[in-house]
Image (cartoon, rainbow, N blue to C red; front, side, top):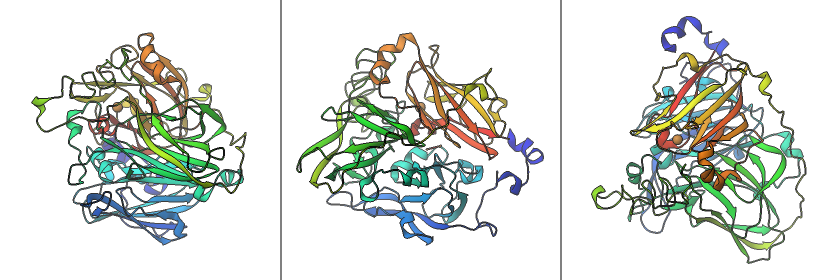
Length: 526
Ligand code: C2O
Ligand code: CU
């Protein structure tokens, strides 16, 4: 374990960039451009008519810097949006007034280990954590959320998640839609009881596939309608759901124009008939409504897909609601014996609408999509320190446990194969039962903390090709990523730089129920 070896081996606080040291007071030698206070409290918010909903609410206040650095969403569970620029130094005071310990993680940002929201830094009721870091990432749609050991899913569900948008000069120089034409859309599923209270009870029922809510929420609102002008928009979609995977498509069959992924803009726009978006992933779209008449509507849908390895068109374990883990009411685990627990009315892999876009007025400007958006240095496997010996992470799920290389999460527990030399490029393979050894077949969106990576290969077991076929045309890669969906029977290879910071950085499944079931580990960068 690193704890024993650590004290002697690791550099001092200053040399390490703050590794291993919890921070509860501002440091005198850090001079922030922006200073933000985030306070977590229990609050009642008016999501529906009738009784207000009790949520875990994050409220933001700017203590220093531009007021536009934050945007509160007071009428729903959604946490504030943070907007900063590359190069800015930020200090964030997290005040935890919740009746539980908690810590926030800045998903996709490259920050020192003790600024990264590792569960070991969770603070209790009445305590604060002080984050101080520079924004090193390029422009992109990042986000933040609770990362508290074994209760991440429930805390995120209750409201501890929001957007963290980064802008930079390269992006500003492009003629992309800005301001009110640059819209974030946080997609989540939730269930509510008849008193308008958040209902998380079906996570037990559906434990192996994680929580699935009955309704889709966008930016914290049900039945979301996006009013637009007839012109071009930049839409930033985040799948902030605990477990639900979306197969996104426009309702009229028009192509989706993807301009960005987890780590910012692609080199060039790419068109897809549909896009798979797993928990934790982001996608940026160029959506031009200028050809549409005022009053017309279009919706964003999730199309049906088969996520079983067996490819029986929805009859598999996870498919369309008829199988063992599916809709439940007709399945093995559903029905009377399970008491009050119920499974989702919106089975995973079924087809449904996410939100409507309504053109309410003519557009003011006409804009054309830039042909070239950015330059993305292509990482080369030959430059990887371990190019002869990829690190394999086997994903498996059995007997109510979710494992990485057969291990479940334990704090302060780093094994030899989890130690990575700092400033190295690494080849990492996520193996989801490629050889048929994963136990229960399940998709796993794998997330790595720290720097963004590039996906270089996807391989599919011939036996699972049929199921894979229903999603494979919508997997977007070729840009920077921090989360990669790994389907059952698939092996995904990524190249990831581990630069600048030493210390513990997590790798885990971003299906939050899987994460809480143990499908999470630390890498030690040293
Ligand atoms: Cu978005 Cu470690 O998580
Ligand atoms: Cu998983």
